Image (cartoon, rainbow, N blue to C red; front, side):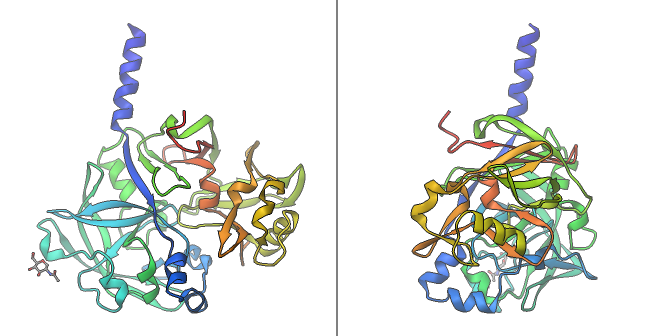
Length: 383
Ligand SMILES: *[C@@H]1O[C@H](CO)[C@@H](O)[C@H](O)[C@H]1NC(C)=O
């Protein structure tokens, strides 16, 4: 009897989980390469992940960068009747924004879904504005409130940004806007409560956490709101406390090793788990060292694709656990060649992006301020 009750409770709980399928679209790089524009765009909009992690210098500033590779997006709807948008679910920022129907500055506006405020009976304008900081300039927009529909969940009175001016590079992105999943102290639209905080406050999910499974295939990736789903991982979830209240999903890494040799992060380091960054980013010296250990023959981490089988596992030692990345997970195609998924940036911190998250199903636990990592299944069907 007792067992029956427990089973019933589990079933009910898993029924409350909201699963949002994510699609791995064509990357901006792929689209630009096909148009012969990639090199030009790369020069013009230098990929500068740091721009995203700059803390607010003053005023309402949504850091925004050129995401040449980030490709995972899901669909949400805004307003009454609902208008649909493809959004990047970004654990490295905390705002929601989509293009406004009045956005007309570039092709980027016309080639994406745009929100029409007058077509929504539940839209409420705000007198605020917001701006997004590009490496090359600013994007500005209006701020308003409306109902957001994610799966079959309705979040009422959600603040969001409506972009009016967009830089041309956004044209090549498969998604229309961004839905940030970082902590509320990283939100840049003044006084705004982030979407996930409202979902929890409005009692829509059983637990104050969400989890992300990233597949290497076009389909199969999933954002799970309100819980974890064992069909996406094997073994148990290892919990890691948030190390510093920066507003990001920031954890402490003890060291990075290859076959027991410390190759980076020798004295410990800080890392942010970010679904909105493609690579694993680290300090130049450390990343160059890792690239050297795995046999890269250029500063850009170019490796021979045929070497993957002979390249070593890289281990991130975190909170007493070892998280292994085999070469098959950290080597990415690069034109007709291959590159390691380790990039450099001018910062002591590490960013654990999609290269890391594809290998580890990640739980973002707001209730405990924990990050949970478990071995991701290659595909959720293959039990
Ligand atoms: C916005 O919606 C209104 C009301 O449905 C409609 O009259 C108007 O044409 C729409 N604007 C655009 C630019 O689509």
